[in-house]
Image 1 (cartoon, helix red, strand yellow):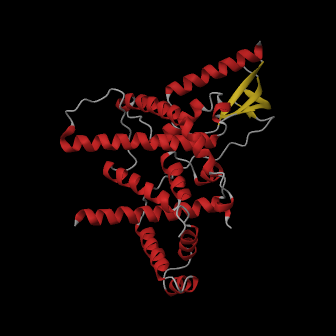
Image 2 (cartoon, one colour):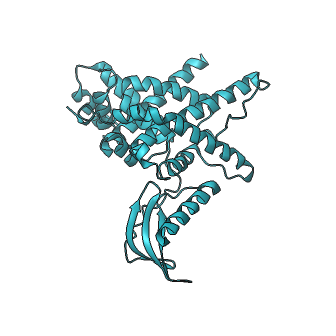
Image 3 (cartoon, rainbow over the protein chains, first blue to last red):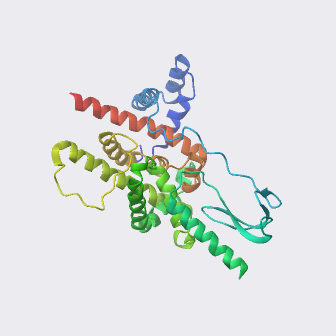
Length: 139
Length: 189
């Protein structure tokens, strides 16, 4: 095996794993590497570990966040109507929007992509950033 | 030749990431500190949520040029978070073994550990061994487990297909589990 790259073992482990446990899987593994008992043993012990591992290293959130919102110009979000996208960053997308109530004006509306628990500090920084953008728009 | 050997670009971000590491490390420590302060209110965040918050603060704050791309950030953040969690786990171990009277640096932070401290330390060592077997598989674990990326995001960051990440994740999980089980058995003898 080449150091730092276990392609063959990984591929074989994957292919074997997708076959139903039992004679079919055993036969597949044997036929895939008949002259390499050590490799077969590696795959078998990994398959056993895979079956025993349960939720080991499970990083999926119990409630996966909803997918990205597919908002587009023309959509209405609360009191705002999206005019055009004016920026995109790590946090989300910034739209030029028309505020309709209580006053009619153009604003920058930042739509946050990630649904995460956010700290007060982060939200405070965010509102400062939005304020700065809006001051820039009005200037 | 397969995708991994063809595409060595995923190695590149790690080198760039090492330059950014101190900065992400400091930011994560700071956030972890805020996190501790929140403990009383019962609203502490999981380490992976802190990584995303650091992302929003550092990359989302408009310094995107410095970071180049998300990739550099998450590679650095996974390593930084790994270090912080390991420090935290080591401290817990010292306390367990009677070292609780030693001087504690006020800058030290505690985070909710994703695994019990002894398992986390064993995982960390096993991860280093995995890197010598398949470095891409180890990197996938770091990004998904320590930085909380989805497999799709990890694929994008590493510049490989989602199928490649899925296979490496599945392999890495079984491989690491097998390592930890061997250690547990050896430890019991």
